[in-house]
Image (cartoon, rainbow, N blue to C red; front, side):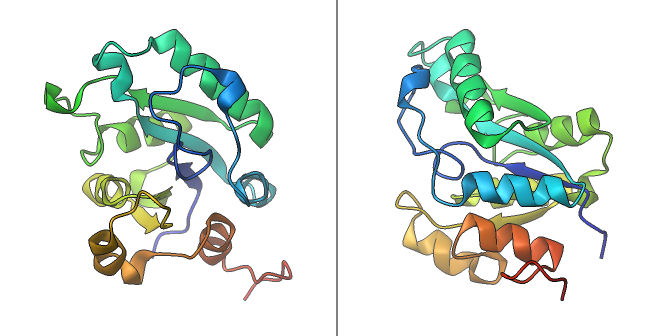
Length: 180
């Protein structure tokens, strides 16, 4: 098994509360454990990033600049991640970047200088885990209210109850901070 060198998080429903098509930085709210999970990954020398579908751009509901402003607010609240990449396309665009396709994960890995196999992708829906698989990375599902029960069942062996537990598990660290 390849050692994890980077953790790539989904944004909405994973790091921040899911506000559909959010273009307002003032509406960004971190989910419980998000800042701690990012800090834990960084404290172990891992690169961190966000890979996020933002179809509101392709649908004409917000602009790429709106997404960048929301990302900047989330980044400030999280203490700073190494990179943010997003797919601006509508679901029917057929692009290579929209999760569950591997494009976002491959782009993030390349920009971080990390092989995809050394990346862990954490998200709240099947598309996140499937994008990781398609890129040759490892995926972990952290169920949220938007996660379909079928997805929870399908990825039961590749899931964690919360974000901090997912990062701890990837690092082999116990809740007390000790390595297993």
